[in-house]
Image (tube, rainbow, N blue to C red; front, side, top):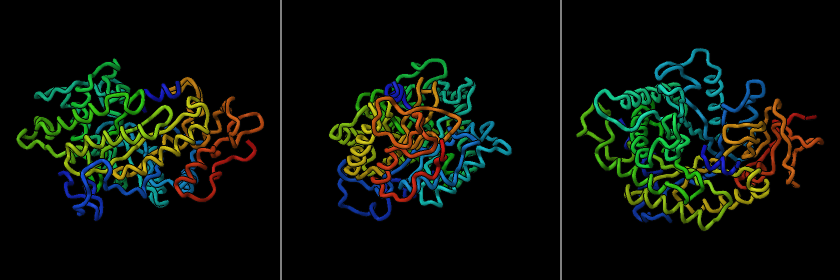
Length: 430
């Protein structure tokens, strides 16, 4: 996730359909190379973020949780699938691992329900003790700790993808232009934007090689970029161009110490087949949203000279900070309407399915109310916001009923064209 939420809360598969072509669209010579055109399939527009890591064994109900998303009209699900959940080292899976079993069950249930899974990992094995940290500045000299780390990163992706061949899309890390994720484990001022883009280029290439070696049909997604103060108020444009400069330089795109630099790839598809960013805004301004996102896509076009699909794998609003759920609904509705004017955008994953109804979360001292559904964990007790006058599924004492849909869930269902019961997780009598 992003610093911005703190503010809101206070081998390469060059011929696959994922490159720049989608179905018959790639053969159309009349598709102008500008940000008013694109090749995305917007039947997949309505997506969701689901974090299995936030669910408890006592309350996890995969069948009904997937049914809930299906009934809401969800088309894609971004799944948090971090290396340490399933693995004890880059090449070793944990034995008899409940997380692995549950993830296979979840992925299968989503697929059976007609939803496409997007697997995302933003952890790695390193010596800092912090698995989110990127421990070293770029140093590709022989025997460097950085190259050893990249080799482990490659091996880790191979292990993950081999275990989960059912995943069609793999997002490589998360918000790699954000110091919450691109830091050395000691200081969040570890790396400049230029240094972040250098490390990210290597990560994307090494991970892409691993992913396609284990599953040539899988499609790789750029770890979604973001801006901690909101869309257009950060480094996304600068970072994106630096990333493309690195790809074009011939200094990246090969295995350091094992392959010749003369074979370096300058093809952006060998690093990511789908571009991705997280266009968070504190409120919502349709004109700015469209113009800024088009600006970022123009950078893709200028460098690749072809259309490429884009995913927005995170966006959402916290009820607490946007002054109530009704504002969050309004912004969500306006956002999806704006997204229909971006024909290169294929899916938008709302952050996220559930509230987290406990204090002292990783990004907030309070409850985190990004969710479309009340926290289904009945061991957590949290109450409706005092400012709310239209909340639903609230107990007589003001408690949010576990697993009950919020107004946001019904609004999403209307937008996505879903149908069916959204109360499948409610525990009567709470």
